[in-house]
Image 1 (cartoon, rainbow, N blue to C red):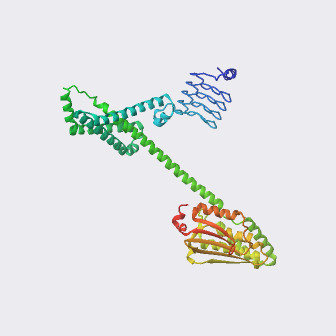
Image 2 (cartoon, rainbow, N blue to C red):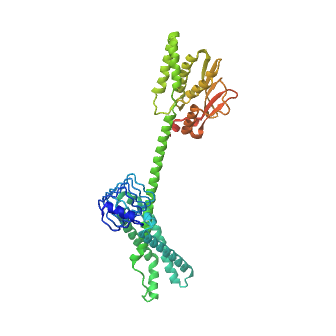
Image 3 (cartoon, helix red, strand yellow):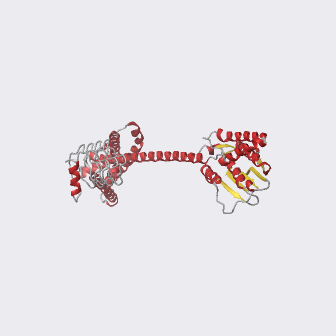
Length: 483
């Protein structure tokens, strides 16, 4: 059946197309509407489904080696138990699609017990029924023997039940502890899962037999001898190898789920590590974006001032040019990968910036820089954290004054907090003023670096000033290394 015949048949039929067990290797079904089609148990190697509508299609138990599903719509399609080796699903929509045990056919090495139980397939149902039966039978046995320990009227039967319970409890404890003790060794020594389970099974059988034989000669021999005499040799027990099934089942389940848990823990740890790295990268990117740079308007104003001074006052123009050069050496010459610098370096840049502005404003601008304790100069703070405040004070304060303006930069420590304070005598901050870009960038930077251990406040009383306060304990080298 060629492409045209199949397309016509699909359009004429009111029901979805059903071609189970078909051989359609190499066919081209690109861009066709094949919603609900049933190609289960079919050979579809190297078929082209590019751009096709395969919503609700059934392709389970099919061979789809090298098949192209590029840009196809596989919404709610069933591809369970299919061989998808080298299949191309670039751009395909697979919301709700079922790929249980696909990609490499039914590969028993890749199946997980939890995955099988969750798959709602016949295999999952059989395993669930089997495990449920074993659990119910085991619980019933526990209840029965516990009741016999209390209600048995025959002392010999009671002693036998006590021995059986003791043997099973000790065997269970031994099985779990020995399995957990061997788990790391098995994981590190053997690559294949079936080899690990085979080795642990052999060791558990040997350990169980050793324990049971020891308990038999210690407490059980007399009980079984007396029981045979009482029943005149008619007492028969099940073969010994049947009793190893319990420890075998327990050890393999404990090892399997323990390994799954360790793998999950490793995945979670790796994901947490990746998330931490991503968070650090995100923080670094945000800090890069928040690194203050000299405002272009400041550069324009400074260059215009230099141009006007070239003819009027060449010496002052030269002074301003040198100061501007020094300032840009500070802002561009330092390592941009380090977000910290000493207070002394930051204040040196602030002084240079204010000297440039002082040339522009002349007598209208006076400034003073104070550090109450010289030891504070050696503390490290985020780069470019003071200069934006000074720039803000000039832009929104000093430039609006007809009289002389004054800026005071004051660094001091109080109650375990470092304070970086910039004061000016310009107009007060409006009560409803929103933070501008300069203030917001500092707020964001402080939050990224210090969290709740830093804040910025704007005050109008008793004087107008902006105050950055950072808990001093966060300024140690150890705290910086975490960022």
